[in-house]
Image (tube, rainbow, N blue to C red; front, side, top):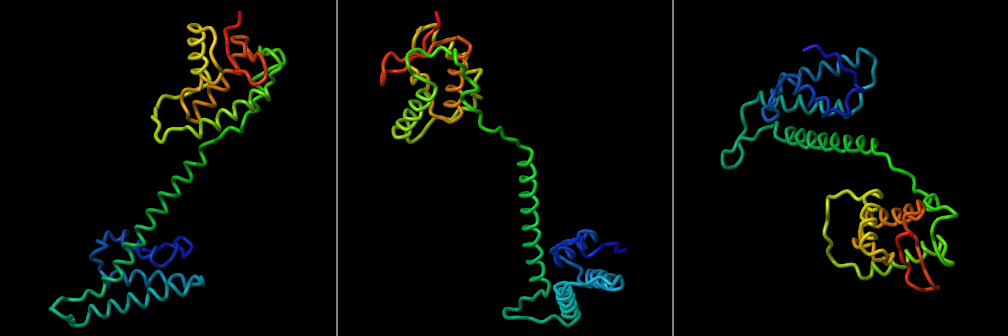
Length: 237
């Protein structure tokens, strides 16, 4: 087997040994030690001829392979209960552990690369959804509306049920605008807070932005008659 490999191509001696075993199409549970040791030593020798520095851990594994090879050449030793001891067992276990570790590392790397393909949008300025002539009646301002909304969320958190129903339906600003339009066609006027019937982040954000966008487009009017009164949304006449 021609070894055209460089030392920096491997993460360590077990990585090299695992590569040689797979290239030779060996069963990892029945490693042909004499053959694999020869290939491993040829690799070390070639690196030395190329004046490449060999890490001591590669040399340690080389000595272990030679030791295992010599044990296999000797008459089989028997331990208690006549169970034959396989000198390769410890090495096989180390290789299996390393292979499992390598597979996990590969999976995590793939997930990391996939995560890099996901882009997030910077938070929008809520004031982009409202203009000076947006239909908000009385002295209530956008900041007042946001403040009232935050207090509403705090109350909701305290009263939130222990379990909530999860839905796979996508919640968008557009879909919430459509829903709110249908509600206002039936009721003409509704409490701003009654529009938030589902307590999930996606639903709440989409609903809040939908209300602001509809107010901006003159599709509804946000009203508060007096300070601390209920905030309502109604069809614009």
